[in-house]
Image (tube, rainbow, N blue to C red):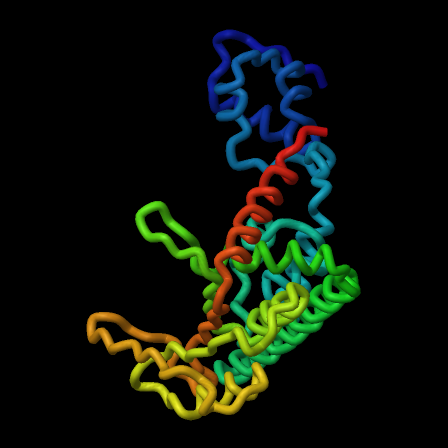
Length: 285
């Protein structure tokens, strides 16, 4: 039956017609054309409370994901686990399942801490393996040093850690100090390359007054191949109560000072070589 709209039609009569058409499965556009109602506000008022037919609903690509997310949540999965399973965002998951009860924790606080610590231990162990491998590969890449390479390495090392002559303090002498046993070994090997006899070397320990001085002197004497009695009197550093020392472990042995007698000419060679290295590195390809 064709419905003819009169401008004098009662609103309730018009609403009854709109509802009847809605229940027949018509869309808003079809009702609009049938009743010739072109005002959207009036049209929506006429069908208010009547659900649209299923065929007019726009399909949602995420409907399947939403249902799956709700199933997983009901099984007790966390947001992280659901995200890993479905590959969607946490914000969407939260919107889809927020009306569902929160699952009971899978682990106690103690169990969570234990799992976290186990994970950290595993990560640190893997990092330690990677760290050691990187160092090993770098170490093996160096190989045996030539005399020239050792000479340049020694000059560079001395200029970084050794005493230097100043215009305001003339000090043309080799005097080296360091706390790293490997650095001391390399420095001594460099002196051997320069054919400096051990008789021209003077050794002295510089250490904090609260440390075990005798033990430190024995350690350094063994390292350089002399008796503790051959060392010069140790230089003791006084304690400053305003500072907090961190080098107080058992491995703390202070520093070893190595002085080379009659070394003014050698010092000049070292200084000249150092500036030669600087100039040699300053080139434009």
